[in-house]
Image 1 (cartoon, one colour):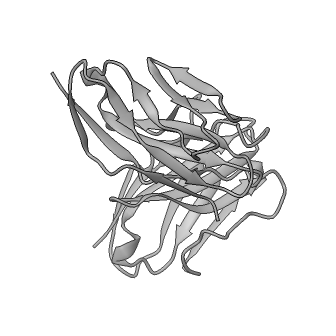
Image 2 (image 1 turned 120 degrees about the horizontal axis):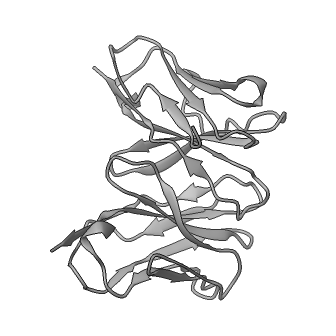
Length: 111
Length: 115
């Protein structure tokens, strides 16, 4: 079945550092790929998405590119802020319409 | 409200008791999902409702778990004879389900603690 694998956290960075959170997936078809973010005390919310190979999703300075050849969708940000501290979930959705999520990666940004 | 609403936000129950968790999806969203979020385990799919179709119950972990969705809107997740391993945050989400790239909107969850 479908699955999503994310790097283990927590990821701890200083403010203005570069961020990469790795995500790889296994799917039988051509899924849509997502990053969701869960800020402390809040529900998950969509951060960005990509629907086909080589698409780049971007939002709030975050980017991720749909790489079919490596089945990856790594999340990047050039300069993180303290307010980016949250848990980040990679997810995919295929023809079943039921999103499959990774385990989540906690990001902690220090001033 | 405009978002997905879940109640209660916190629930502490004794082992062996039954609990009901409620979800009010966004108006007009035909799809509704329940997930369970355990510490270090990510989001585990439980059940999916889409319009008037039979629900996809493939994620329910045991027959102690059941869910219904009345009138295509509000959903209730019921856990019978709760066990300590049922302790988790139960998340509800809804979407327009226009395609696999449709965004899911999540509630803030119900934190269930079984003592």
